[in-house]
Structures are given as structure tokens and as C-alpha cells.
Amino acid sequence: MKPSSSTPLLRVRGVAKRYGDQVALHEASFDLWPGEVLAVVGESGSGKTTLLNAIAARTAPDAGSVEFLGRDGLLQDVHTMSQAQQRLLARTDWGFVHQNPADGLRMDVSAGANVGERLMGLGERHYGRLRCTAEEWLQRVEIDPIRIDDAPRTFSGGMRQRLQIARNLVTQPRLIFMDEPTSGLDVSVQARLLDLMRQLTRQMHLAAIIVTHDLAVARLLAHRMMVMQRGRVVEAGLTDQVLDDPQHPYTQLLVSSVLQP
Ligand SMILES: Nc1ncnc2c1ncn2[C@@H]1O[C@H](COP(=O)(O)OP(=O)(O)OP(=O)(O)O)[C@@H](O)[C@H]1O
Ligand SMILES: [Mg+2]
Image (cartoon, rainbow, N blue to C red):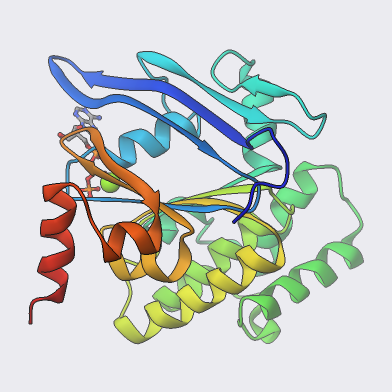
């Protein structure tokens, strides 16, 4: 995706994190442009979730900076802003889709309330409008609106994940973070969800950072990808280039292990 302006949506510089003596993330730097989908791939323990959480201001990094382009056109450091500002960002311009839908949904309140909650957080109080928007979003993520009063507890895994996506996208965020959004699902359910995610990111000009261990997810969704190994970004580039002509031995190993029967 061509950058639509000269300022990135997200500017990450030298973000690092250690847990005790162990370095979970060596300095990572990259830019993300509006509407761009970036996949972060790598083996278990390579630091993908650590990176994602540090960028999404869910944990504080030990070093480095993460700047986000506000609607006012200014880059703002997400780690130096107040907690109130972080929370506002998290429920308006950002979305976060958890691997386990139970971490991102309220399992015992209705699907409609799950979708409406972020809108209410922004001040929408009109019941009819909230319900109407929730119905629209259920439809967009291919959940029958007849289920609007049912709790996600009664939904299948794939439905829960689609509801989590609807709940996040209802405020028209500009950036969504996803940590292994498809990994708990059956292959056929995964394929449908990936299709939906591809459609929505394109329709909404939504930028996304998707953590995945599945190269097929990166191939299908991402414009660019980063490969991580032991807390370091060892390769980064356009998805097709990285997958078709991997340069780093670890990426070569990843790609060839997928190709082997
Ligand atoms: N809260 C924590 N306390 C201590 N060490 C941690 C913590 N979270 C992560 N780590 C360590 O940091 C390193 C990176 O972990 P991280 O969860 O970022 O990996 P990951 O790439 O997301 O792996 P996976 O694919 O298994 O989710 C690992 O060695 C892990 O043990
Ligand atoms: Mg992880």
C-alpha cells in the first residue's frame, strides 16, 4: 500500500523490553502507514506479543518510542500521554483483537451490548441507534442479527471472534492490533475469518498489525511483514518479496518448512 501522506500512522523507534535478565525484545523500529497491514511472524517466544503489547501501550517498554498520528495530524508519543488519553485511544482510534475471544468480549452480556459498548463510551445514548448500529455490525461480520440478544457464551469460536472484530470496528478505528486472531479456530473457519478481515481492512482503509505464526495469514492479509527470532527483527519487507525470496536464514527455514509436505 502506498503511503497516503508523508507522515506515518505509527512510528516505532528502538522499542525494547526485558523481563528480569532476559531480553524479550531488542530494539525494534518501523513505520506503519495509514491503511497498511503488517504481519509479525516468528517462532513461539520470539517476542511478537511483547512487541505488540508495547506498541499498543498495554505494557511500557524499557526503551524507545511509539508515536501515533492523531486525528489532528500530529504525532504523539503513546507512552508519555496520560492514562486517560491512552484509554480514549484504545476505545476509539485503536482496536485490539485478542487470540482468545473471552479476553476481548464480555461473555455474559448480549452480543448487541458488546458491540454497542464502545459507542456508549463515546457518548451515544440513543437506544434505537445503538441497536441499529449493532445489528448492522453483526451483519457485516456475518452473524445473524437474530442473535443480538444472545450472550457470546452461547456462540461458536468463529462467531465469538467475528463478534470481537465487530466490537472493535464499530468506532471506525484507524489501527487495529491482532494477536493470533485465527489460531484457535478450525481451518475452514479460519479461512472465512481471514476473508472477512481482508474485506474489512480494505473497505475501512484500516491499518493493522497482525501477529501470527502462520505464513499463509501473512500472505493473505499483509502488505508488509516482519520476521522475528529471539527478540530481534531479522527480516522485514513486502510480504511477497519476503516469502518468495527470503534473505535471512531463519526466514528461509520458516518458508521452506511450510513448503515441505
Ligand atoms: N510476563 C512475562 N514475564 C516474564 N517473561 C515473559 C513475560 N512475557 C513474555 N516473557 C518472555 O519473553 C519472551 C517473548 O515472549 P512473547 O510472549 O513476546 O513471545 P511470542 O513471540 O508472542 O510467543 P508465542 O508465539 O508463543 O505467543 C519469551 O521468552 C517469554 O518467556
Ligand atoms: Mg504471543
